[in-house]
Length: 334
Ligand code: MLT
Image (cartoon, rainbow, N blue to C red):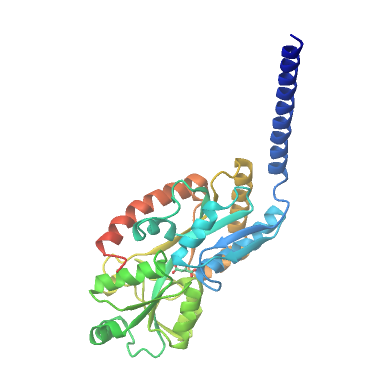
């Protein structure tokens, strides 16, 4: 009898202790969320430093850090067209100290890779869209072709001797380059890099012939003639480079690639922290310096309603469905 009483007493006591511990943990968690962030935050970039994704990340990192009261540190995790970084982020602790910027490769990787170690639609939390970036088909300065017509003839004459840089399967430079080759009915020699930052360096150095790159850094090089611009991937000419015709108007009807970007975290970050990251992103995109830098590169900041979890997730879902059939029809990867 005594023993039973003791057992019940111990059971009740340990129950109370457990409840107290759980309560303490809960209030501890709530407190941690309220105080977040108490240390610097990593912003993962899935391509090499010096490229377009890296530039946008560095542009928003400073005002986001100011809004959050902690430094936002950019970490480049390049390789496999962004899928190495996506895997790392999907597996990171959901504590808000890892955030991630990726472009539309988040949607196209699904159709390009047989098996991904993450699911773009379920492995992340969605903070919001950032900006849409146009692309330009570029050639090295010494390439004999001076315009798109001459480029067509040059490619016809030289075939696979012509080299084209890209940032690997899942990168938009690869998507744009292979769509271009598919539309032209040619197969060039494709050279993968860890990002279009190093690819552009090699184009400027004359080590590679062609690169389809975003306008983020390329406009000054086009303007001062250090690279040749054969056409934009937009339906309308770009205000910053009005003399460069669109690929659409030069015979590649409907050739349109606009590179959208989104900010993510690992799955499971508490909502109060997600709200703080979203508010900081909105603030960064409203910063006059950020706006001016993006406008100068003909980059469109997305409307406010798209800088939201729903805005990004709906867009991602739609883009997975848009690009899957395009990639399969164009027989990418080659
Ligand atoms: C980069 O930042 O290097 C690019 O976004 C890579 C690409 O997708 O072409």
